[in-house]
Length: 230
Ligand SMILES: Nc1ncnc2c1ncn2[C@@H]1O[C@H](COP(=O)(O)OP(=O)(O)OP(=O)(O)O)[C@@H](O)[C@H]1O
Ligand SMILES: [Mg+2]
Image (tube, rainbow, N blue to C red; front, top):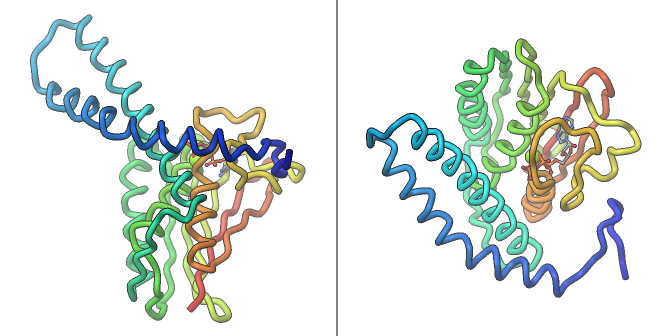
């Protein structure tokens, strides 16, 4: 049985089953999340409120996991459509960074953004935004209060390049080759997750014929880079 570099066994039957389950669960789980949301304004006793909050957090997590599993399956099977349009890439990066800045203010994290002028890029706006969001969420998850996240976009040779730099714990050199593998997570990772965000990001960037990679700065932080062809 073939194994990926992260040691995960290739198993098409399991992947297909997971894909079917994830797609089937998406709609009922999102109905649960919407129903819970609609109860937000209703006055209830403290104990019931706490129970509601637990249900809401858990349902949100199940929905995100379900969506990521379904998306990963679609990307793997080529069952997704890339909607390429000529886009203002600088604006896509700016909007992603602005969304992150809202979260940053709440957590007292400084988001520094530097975006150079750049020509339009043919890309799927929603999916590229999703890639940047996945990288930014990871950066947030590992950055302490008072830390800094840097978003930098520039034009390289025949491509546009975005880098997202955090000053979290970094990634051990030995772990670097595995970070984009499905379900792979570092042994000592301090937050909850499924290990799907970077695999999804890589599949999206591969579909754009771009490049995505990470550089290790153990103890000093991580640098994730995305390049899309011009
Ligand atoms: N900025 C970062 N700094 C340090 N380690 C990171 C960083 N980004 C990712 N990693 C490591 O790579 C692993 C895989 O990341 P990935 O985004 O694929 O999954 P996740 O964040 O654990 O879960 P998910 O994104 O599915 O919610 C992480 O669990 C973590 O060990
Ligand atoms: Mg992640």
